[in-house]
Length: 285
Image (tube, rainbow, N blue to C red; front, side, top):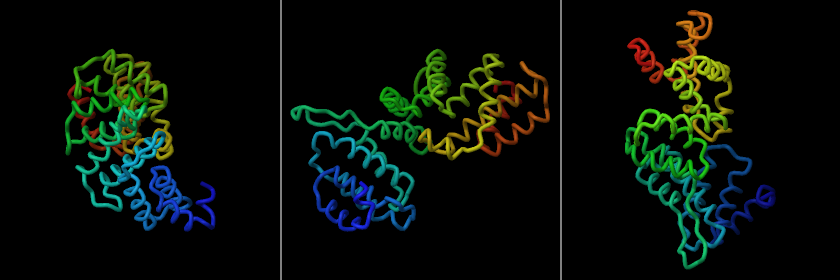
């Protein structure tokens, strides 16, 4: 790759773009982005992605490169970056990447991209394309493939019976498994789990850890999730820590600190915080 990032990058890309292999097209895409961050530089990179995902001749060992291309093409269309926003096309790319397989006669298989599987889980959870059973299905497959994001999502789905039957034992299993590996979103819901079961000591520990978070972008990057997911997790932790402060559950009462935490939760995730606040007033938080 160093060759492509040097002075001969233009000629290298020309050579790669004339190639008919997935790996070469992937290298061309990466070479184009090497050292660049300008939006104006993206169209050519997208054209390489389109070329890559349109190739039919997939050789053994190249399936992963194709899956990466399909994931990014889906993301670009879903977010409307460079290309027009098109949810149907995003879904199409992700589905192809999520179930990518090869003819058994060739002697090898590729069982799908975990990134595409997680993306589909999130896609079907969105109110615009709501299909919670499909969301559960894809998060389950992604979790089995090692997705930390989907591990946390499964915990939430089991906790509230979203797309599946409520199962507190499985909810706790997935939330704790994800939290141990650093999933901030899962930690927020774990704080809620502890609070609702009057396990205030544990809720406080998780809440304090989340309230201390400062660099949301860094966490989002390390966990490969959106900043919004990080903020929701932190906001939830702040909210349940605030309730413990407000009522003196397993700690000294501190209404002033409780108010600070509530304000922080509202700033991070307004809709969720207001919803939790309403439930708290009704005694069902």
